[in-house]
Image (cartoon, rainbow, N blue to C red; front, side, top):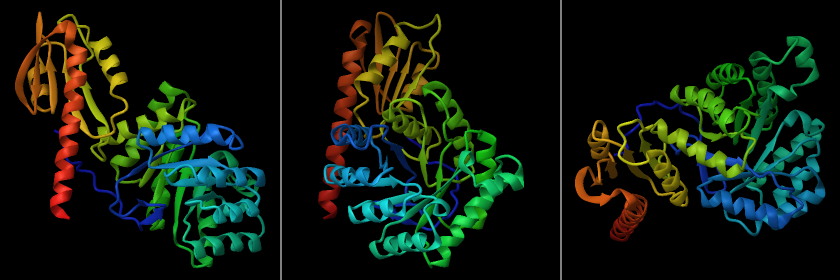
Amino acid sequence: MIQQSFIKRRQSRQIMVGNVPIGGDAPISVQSMTNTDTHDIDATVAQIKSLEAVGADIVRVSVPTMDAAECFGKIRKQVSVPLISDIHFDHRIALRVAELGVDCLRINPGNIGSKEKTRAVISTCKDRGIPIRIGVNAGSLGKDLLRKYKEPNAAAMVESALRNIEMLLAEDFTEFKLSMKSSDVFMAIEAYRAIAPQIEQPLHLGITEAGGLRSGTVKSSAGLGLLLMEGLGDTIRISLAADPVEEIKVGFDLLKSLRLRSKGINLVACPSCSRQNFDVISTVNELERRIEDIIEPLDVAIIGCIVNGPGEARQAEIGLTGASPNSLIYSDGAPHHKVANDKLLDELEAMVRRKVAEKQIAASNILARQS
């Protein structure tokens, strides 16, 4: 069964991105960013909906031009997930998407224009209840900071962050969150650690430009996993050169592994060895493909032999211990029935879907009684 995490999270001020709370005691949210051309409304809407389908809490959309802002307004009307607009250099774009229903602005106050233009954006956000994400990136630090520090480093990132934060606080604006991203794992970790005690606002974690699906997952897990274990982080994005849907899946897998959040199937599987009584690898991969649409939490253990099988199966809601010619399936920690090894996949998928349906019905009954 899924256990409680023992990680003590940093206490931060809670803000709202649409209907999603960020910070405080809210669950750590998982977000991604579209990589379609924002002018292609249909493609962008389709991608946002595919991200919603795998559990994305928030989706970010780049809005580089005023034309893209008008497209964003049409996109906003067709999806329900909270949307963040990514905006640089032109404060008019920020003002326009604010009118069109954006849930959060991702900006660098230092590059949005003059102080007057920055104040106009902050004032609009304050009036409309729109939070801001300050995005500090090691790859786009100000020229003066690069002259001072000679090269991108954590100290330069922290100074950049504090400058941007000062602009917001000068306007009595506190509804913001902060990211301190670098493609260098150690630099990002150092920057987040340094800024965390200096502000009360939520932290958006990410290792930017982490790489492809495999290498980016490893790099992000190493960096974000360490920060999360230290209690830092209120929302995360796994930045991969891959389908954005994979970013959401990896994000939830990371949170599940640290017992910080449970969404979707928590699949425990052995790496297989000569003791296996069925093809563990192909079974696990195919089962994972079949049930990837499920976002309800469920522990499933698939072990190829009786060495570790019974122990793992007893801790899962659905478990499988390999034997020959039939394997033993467990339900809620107890032996349930045997199934022929050539029918494992269909039986496991059916049991998972039945168990999910039972949990949904039970949850609905509880809500009905409470109301």
